[in-house]
Image (cartoon, rainbow, N blue to C red; front, side, top):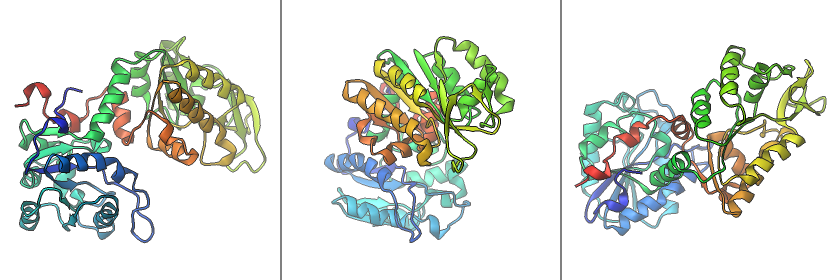
Length: 400
């Protein structure tokens, strides 16, 4: 991690302009339904205060159409943040303009100013230099703590950093993400195992290609496994299959001989509601009327044994339709195996919204070494791509 860190900055008496990821779910009453992402940023905010600075926080929320939409206002987030931190939290219903500049300049050390949704302006997603310049007026230093948005070249994650030469740093959450994911890919303790699941391989081709050059074993689960099984000549019944990706799956399989592991057996049913019951069958011998919805008991033993012997495991994507009780056992078993590995000294890293949701459903999130807050960003990191929100920050070697 060769980027300037918040730990390297002198913040006494300074205003830190911080890009956070407060894109949180709201309930029907418009209140914050899950404050996980807010809580994740508290260490960075508290460190700013400890260093004698004030914090100006900016984020997006939802997908407003480049104009003000009240349902996407960050005001409910300000209310939630107030309950979580022992510091004054001020909110302004805008993110640029004279009133916002005045509010920022009036901040005292130990105070927070939360700006409203940066996506209310078209300049945000356009990475517009002029919009970024307006945001930059608000702070003395820039800190990016929004790993979940680091893969987007937007004004608040990319262009704004250019206005803080030598003073654009990563926050504690971003630093943790980059350290865990970076070390896992560059210098993993071996055996190094990756588990990739989910519905389709089309969104994870680059991830699979990149990981094959780094891991000792690559476990493929979820519905995407059936495209690989069919590409290898197996019979998958009515299971989800990307017919136009069969050749891609075949080529990846050829490259991954000895590394790729597919589930020996599957839990199948005629539909996702399992109205007619479920059966356990070989994954490559599924009758036409059946669909695979989860890995079977043999696959659970097969995958768990590989995880048990590993030193580093990265997991992105569930191995079954875990939202349905009838098909949750496989994903639950993987999560338990990883929790056990963590307790035995291994490193376990989980990324991707569905995988994280599964961990939280099973109550196992706190038993992982690291749970990534950035679904799309962690996926692009695993693909080996550079992240614009990280690239724009100050390199340590160039910091003054």
